Amino acid sequence: MTGLATAPALDLRTRFYEELDPLLDAHPDVDVVLAVIGSGYLSRAIARHPGRVIDVGIREQALIGVAGGLALAGRRPIVHTFASFLVERPYEQVKLDLGHQDVGAVLVSAGASYDVSAGGRTHQAPADVALISALPGWTVHVPGHADEVAEILHREAAGTGRVYVRLSGQRNARPGPVDGRMHLVRDVAAGPDGTLAPLVLAVGPMLDTVLEATADLPVRVAWTATPHPLDADGLRALLPAGLGIAPSLAVVEPYLEGTSAAAVAAALADRPSRVLHVGVPGEAELRRYGTPRDHAAAHGLDAAGVRRRVTTLLG
Amino acid sequence: MTTTAPSSPTVPQRVRDLVARVTGDEKHDPSAHSTLDVVWTLYDQVLRVDPARPDDPDRDRFLLSKGHGPASTYAVLAAKGFFPADWLDDVASFDSPLGHHPDRTLVPGVEIGSGSLGHGLPLAVGLALGLRDRSPARVVVLVGDAELDEGSNAEAIQVAGRFGLGNLTCVVVDNHSDNLGWPGGIAPRFALEGWAAAEVRTHDQPRLTAALRRTEPDRPTVVVVDTTGHLTSEEAA
Image: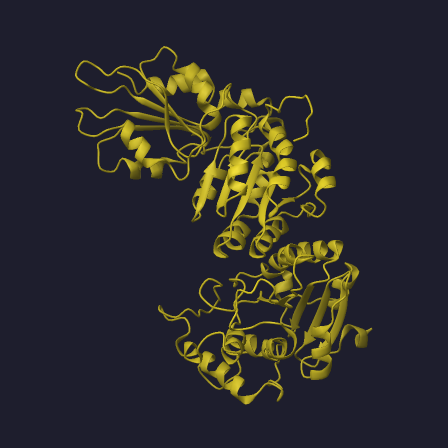
């Protein structure tokens, strides 16, 4: 470590950049592949690890193709740019140069659904998790805290799989366990007939918003940083069959609404269920600029909007 | 109009017979046969590969980017003992590991799955970066002249040139099948990006072998192999 007195960054993207230098020290087979974005923050890592931070310029097809080739050579590539240029623009390269070649990589995106709210649609990628999840063999992490980013990075750098890590400007006050499982964060007592309260599943950085939105509502709150593959056993345990009326569920995701719908439906296929999916609506572009907070409100993903939606599950 | 001359006599008749087992007739499948001289020369004269050790980390890599013409590659791999020749008799059947586009996870000696054009050269650049200074292996990738339409190749040509990848060779099999053509020729496009370029005719065996063997320590090499008898860009200039 650097020994500097400065505390680790709380911003997820900044923390990612901070972690790369020690990560390259700890994992000799890791290379970092960039398409310009991020290189300006990595002068120390670039200087200390010659040849291991590879910037291919503004060439996103080459970004993924080169990562696939590095993996074929036995390297462990960590690949980074904005989500729109990491997932959407080179989608066929993600499918073929990584998936079809049966090699791994850690793709780390910035920008999320509307971090670049002032930049407009070109820099927004609310469908990224849905697109990655549509391809075989991927794990998707959506951390909500910088410490989670560091833990995920170091673990996945030591692995061999295909991993997508979605960094966002939105974050929670405290880190949670990033073990791929679903965790009950707030419980409420069951009704007198044993009926469980509705469950709200918050994904990644949505947790603090969900907790604020539901503070005085009779709902349980669960959380995961890994929406894909979904912890189906964990979800089933929280929504047990055979207790009379099945508890209802709201899934609150910071990206395209319904992204986890198929996985949730599959997990609950053997029991009656009522499920509400809350996320970024996919029907129309929001052709407005402003702040990420403005966009959260417009999409119903601020505390007031989440509360409105969750309330429809009650009563 | 694409015209493809018959394969040169330097490719043994037994190998050409293996190609015919894949294509299923004695006619010439242009996409397969335009690559046969190159692929045979590579495996017979140039590449350091051992069918007994297809996963040797220091093996040379041959990447067939033009994956829609795998017959010659399949035939050469079978001739060199990477898999039994009888695999060639039911290509693309449900139980066959050999398809109309190759899958690296199914076939010993096949380094990449290909078929969608424009993926081999970027993968080769990454492979060369990963092997450089860590292994004596060369990376040789075969593309077609029409395949170069795909913009991903332009990105990869630029990156390989800027990074001076001396362990990378691109072979462009030029059967002049590109609809819009390449005014000024293909080789100068690589040369402008810092590649060492050579142009040879497919049947000029000594020059073909020498060109494929050539590497430069500080830059990638490209060998544009004309299969049709057209003038090279140097001759045309």
